[in-house]
Amino acid sequence: MITIEKLRYTYPDGTEVLRGVDLKIGRGERVAVLGPNGSGKSTLFLCLNGVHRATEGRILLEGRPMAYDKKGMLDVRRKVGVVFQDPETQLFCVDVYQEVAFGPHNLGYGKQQVHDSVMKSLDAMDVTELKDRPPHFLSGGQKKRVTVASVLSMSPQVLLFDEPTAALDPIHARQLMEEIDRLNAEGITILMATHDVDQAYAWADRAVVLDSGVVRASGTPDEVFCDVKLLEQTGLQTPFVLRTYRALLRSGRIRGADSPPHTAEELEALIEEV
Ligand SMILES: Nc1ncnc2c1ncn2[C@@H]1O[C@H](COP(=O)(O)OP(=O)(O)OP(=O)(O)O)[C@@H](O)[C@H]1O
Ligand SMILES: [Mg+2]
Image 1 (spheres, rainbow, N blue to C red):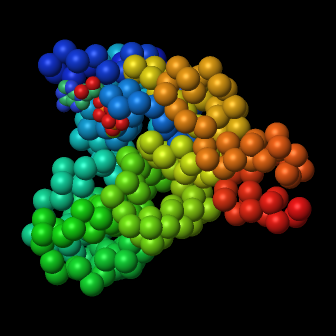
Image 2 (tube, helix red, strand yellow):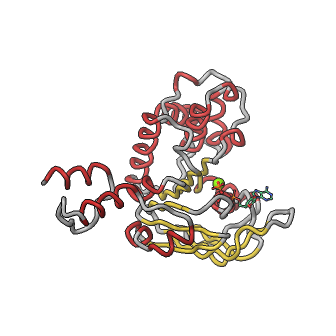
């Protein structure tokens, strides 16, 4: 779905952020993008959405190099949706309904089609009741949910979520993860930048670790989170479930599973067997 070749990106002020990123992402994959503050996760997402143009190297979508002319950008916007880390940068309409309608309208959907996709997306993000409110006067989490709805309404094939659950209460965080899983089950490719190692470990097919603008590691969560040296070098913690599982195993309190548990529920099931 996405091929990134030797991608470099330097901001206009000379800050060199991406220093040769190579990555291939398959259709329908769920990829967690990890890495310390300033490692380039958000910048990478902005390159994937065409907001930033590669300084060197290139990005291919479905095998075709990203084109930065008007037609090329329309194609990128149609295929790749990004939910920014900071919702403020993404909200600019007078009310929530128009905010969510903006994307599909720009992509040339018909009137009824715009309305249907808006109502469906508002409902998916539990923000239908806010549809007549000005986005700027919403709470942080509500703003976040509106920005997610505004991206879902364009039905992209690739969704980039930049720390999507950071501002959300537990119920809405779970609701969003369920929505993400539902979209993924339909074949949508999902990339998620996160500092939440527990979430990455439980959710991802693949974990990519960015560090100082290069890919330090890319593998299954088991591969990445068992690499003690990598974790040390990049400041990542071992996920809580994995750590607890190992401690219980060491002290002989549970039997070893074929593959380590990834969620609290899987760990509980192992404990309850005893
Ligand atoms: N508009 C900009 N102009 C200049 N430098 C920028 C700009 N935006 C970001 N940077 C710099 O680029 C680097 C990477 O930032 P980026 O936001 O991509 O990191 P990140 O991995 O998303 O970090 P975080 O975990 O804090 O979200 C940082 O050093 C940042 O200061
Ligand atoms: Mg960021």
